[in-house]
Each structure stands twice: as structure tokens, then as C-alpha cells.
Length: 81
Image 1 (cartoon, rainbow, N blue to C red):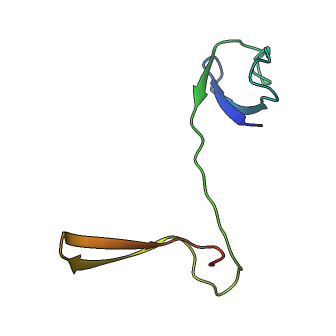
Image 2: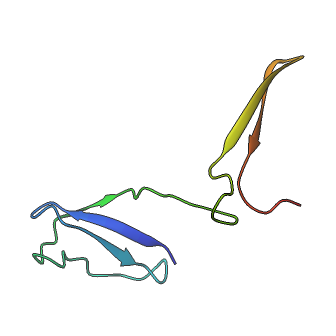
């Protein structure tokens, strides 16, 4: 169930709408001024995985020289196998 974010072109307010099914027709109006002049915007995302507190946060990379030039390993936070 994706959540879409819109910006009203009349009053510049931003709001979110939950789309339950792909084929659903939803009447979109600005909740602040009731305008139908809207544009869809891309939301910024942020995530945190794993334990909080003193744990390392974010994605880390390590680059080294290899036979093909440079190789990079990525360490993504979360549970390991």
C-alpha cells in the first residue's frame, strides 16, 4: 500500500494520500484549500536498521586495489547471516 505525497499548486501545502489498490480512483483535493491543482512530489527517505544506541549507523564502504582496478565492498546496517 504505497503512500503518495502531493503539493498543492494553489497554496503550496504538502500532504500524503494512501492508495489501497492500483485501480482505485481517488478524488484528490488539497486538505487545506480544496484545490485540485496538485503535483506529485518524491518524498525523501531515511532508514535505520539494527540496534540503537552505540551501534554504527548508516552504510559504510571500503575500497581497495584489485586485478580489475578498484573494488568496493559495502557494509549495510542490519542483521548479518
